[in-house]
Length: 143
Image (cartoon, rainbow, N blue to C red):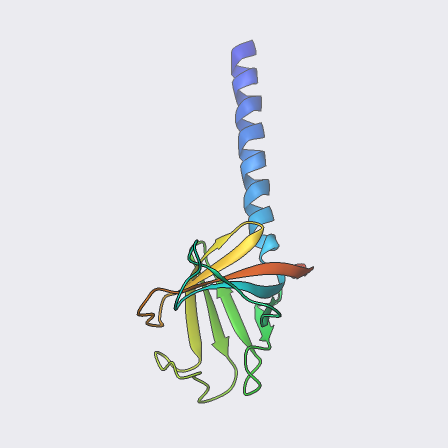
């Protein structure tokens, strides 16, 4: 009986920590992220080029985003899954010279202390990726 209770407690502790870690990861993507490195073109020794004063994405907890990547269009809807993040810009006809589909930019991502985005629906001849550093926290909205 003692072993059954102990097993049950260990199982509850394991799943409790796992659920907390998942929620922590999900909420940690919300906030303002500034571009700090780019992988494209002629790389440095490790393949990454540092960016001074890079553009920002503010990923809000209400499924919206704001950015200063372009003066033409600066906001839209954001959707996040375990493997992908999609920025769908509000402005009709906004493409930044990428048209598949218009105004929608999809990335695979990894999240730690750095957010790394790799384009899915944009062709990069030499490969490309972007690294962002969080500069401001934001909380997700309760549903």
